[in-house]
Structures are given as C-alpha cells and as structure tokens.
Image 1 (tube, rainbow, N blue to C red):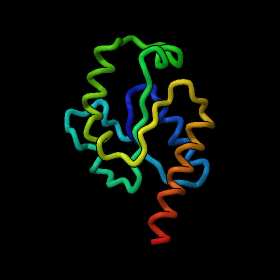
Image 2 (spheres, helix red, strand yellow):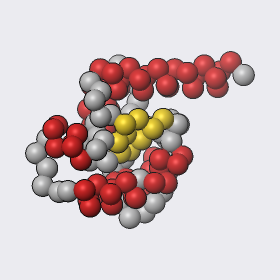
Image 3 (tube, one colour):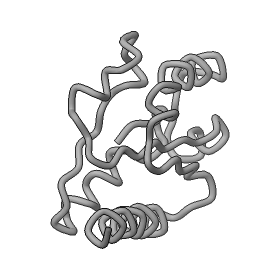
Image 4 (cartoon, helix red, strand yellow):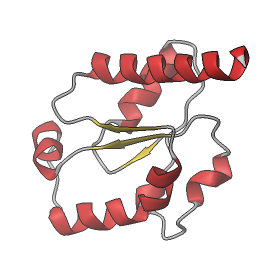
Amino acid sequence: MVGNCVAGKTTLVKGLIAQGLSAVNIAQEHSTAPQLWRRKNPDFLVCLSCTLETARSRREIYWGQERLDDQRQRLANARAHCELYLPTDGMEIEEVLATVIQAVKEKHKLTTSG
C-alpha cells in the first residue's frame, strides 16, 4: 500500500488484515528512493491518493499543496507500476476496502484461471 499522507493507507491496511488478508503500509511518500516500494515485493500494489482539501477534512495537517505535490512526485514510480490506483476523495472507508478486495479477487481469478 502506498499513497500520499492521509489518503487512507493505515486504515485500509487495518481493514484488510481484519478480513484475513496480508497488507503492509509502505512509506514511499517519505522516501527519496523512487522504488522503495519494491523492497516489500508486493504481489498487488495499491496506490491511494487524496486532495489537500480531503486530507484537511480528515485530519488536522500543518502542511500545504507543495508538500502534497512533493509526495505525489515521490509516488510516481509506484503509481506507474500499481495494480490499482484509487483516489479516496469522497469515499467511505467501507467503499475503499470493498474496492480493493474486489480488485484483488479479480486479479486472483485472472491468474488462476489462465
């Protein structure tokens, strides 16, 4: 799981684990190593995002658009290689969780049916 701050990574990881799935939050948005995410060798990479407005509605933050833009730049490689890119603006926690689980199931169907 990668994504900018406050996009929902930690909440999603907790939800996936509660469903019996393996998930890890990779702090790619804080790393200057463009491929830090590869060190975890994910079999299904999810990239979450949200706007500054959404981030501010979810949590008190002390940073602005410049930092968000920097995080998006640091996430560019992961986003280019992810199996699911999901903007979480306007989504409830349950919707994000269901969307990711469905995407994982679809990939599993494709890899086991061929």
